[in-house]
Length: 111
Length: 112
Image 1 (cartoon, one colour):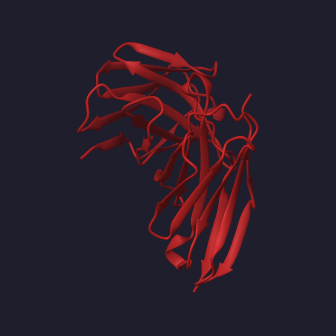
Image 2 (spheres, chains in turn yellow, cyan):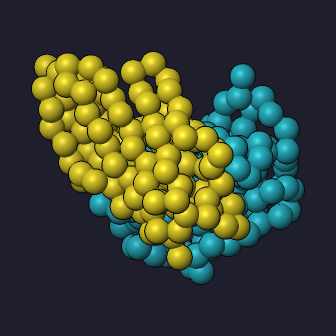
């Protein structure tokens, strides 16, 4: 059974700082891994999708890497801004096409 | 472009009452559709997914059911709500099982 852990659970940083969010998963037999952000009371917004054959994906100030063999993914946010404050979720897609979500990292960027 | 709608946005229902939440997708055909629940302080839990009209797979045994009467319509139902059914219900879609998932705005359900 796939288990997904996200570290840290919460993070507070000053504006402008570069930061790394970590995601680990127990079953490396995945098809892809998706990173989402969720604002309070809102749905999930897709940030990046990494296919299992890829090592990383970039979108603007975001860079996500995937090391499938070790069961790890990281989301790197450059030059953080207050608007980046949200909960970030990672979700590997595994057998039976089931996406399993981590509990998320709550990020607060102070102006 | 594709758009996903959910309604109602919020719902307060008494224990034992029925439930019907609706999700519709625009701008795509034959999508895979998903219902998730996010309980307070907990992660997202996959409830149902559908790869086509009338095809429903249930992930968690409970008093909820799902139906897909049309290609781009997905409905979550219950005959009698429980207190434990309270939560944030999210609908999602993708066009292939291993492709990017897109989520709707969600329905906040409170059972009293």
